Length: 93
Image (cartoon, rainbow, N blue to C red):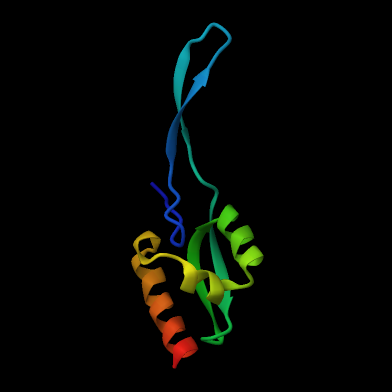
């Protein structure tokens, strides 16, 4: 199943409850999109599969570089961890 590479958001199971209180299981999948994000520190585009809610959060925080540096490493995918390492080297060094 698809997961967001930056937040780790993945599919969840929920119950649809009818008026007669019959519970039906349903999968809710995040809206995953393949996006090219511009990194100002690296001065290039990075392609990642992320949720649309993550795109809004990146805009709210103030850019891709600030978002990925603040994100905990245990939520990131392998590709995102590599990008985080490259960005943090440029920003701190």
